[in-house]
Image (cartoon, rainbow, N blue to C red; front, side, top):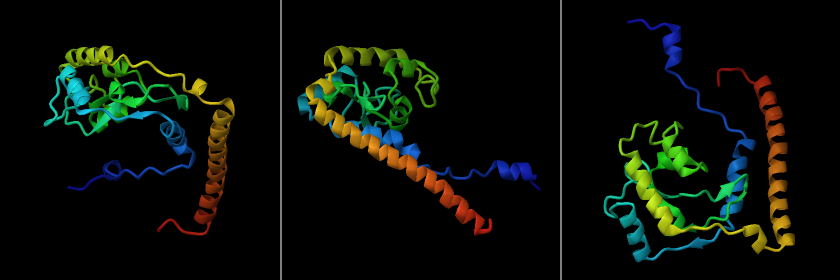
Length: 196
């Protein structure tokens, strides 16, 4: 069977290139993660969360979709618009999750995301017991009573401005590097052929 050029080309997907400025969100997130309080849970607290969510520590499942859990996700995001939301990294803001759900949800409101059509959301993946899972997560949220801190008010303005000034310097340098990378890529392309 002879395949057409269109069929052959359709099976190929060029790996995506990477941009320096495409890492801006990662830099902003790391700046927040470095200052957010991390509160380690006790075994009893973990047991309590698992009980509320109707999950088993031995066969841990994703709170959102029921697939095998691979990590714990912040139910309420730590970062919004590049700054801390004030929510902690603690058992009162962490639920078992699979990688697909964690990546898909991002910083979206968890309930909107679960009922929404984002790629890999429980609704888009046709998870059948979404309402039950939402009910368990609402019970967890009620138990957790997780109130955000106004982090900026807890830090001296001078220190805060210095910290986020450094972030802006790094992001500015990344934008400069992105411009240079385009020039370098063009120069390399002009001096090589397309067969490499």
